[in-house]
Length: 108
Image (cartoon, rainbow, N blue to C red; front, side):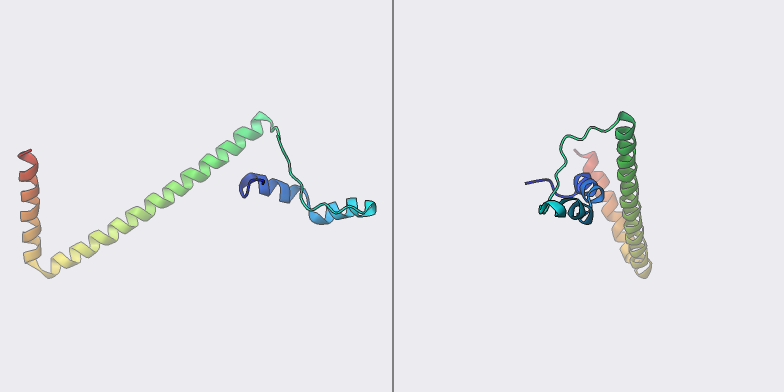
């Protein structure tokens, strides 16, 4: 079977329209159901342009993921601050927990 998705399907479906194939082959009594393109050689400048576009897309996605992570961390910090505001004892316990963690790290 052929590959699914990606540039292969986009190229084939955009390049060969079923109506165009039917129009060209109906007079011969032939029905073309599938066209497969193999070993397409793209000029170097087109390959570089496609690679640059793919890289830009990856970088864009990475920035969105990082921004979502920052947003989630910010929410969690705000929630923690709200909880600590409600109970001064919580702040004291957190402080003692932090001291305990530091002491444990210094003993290893």
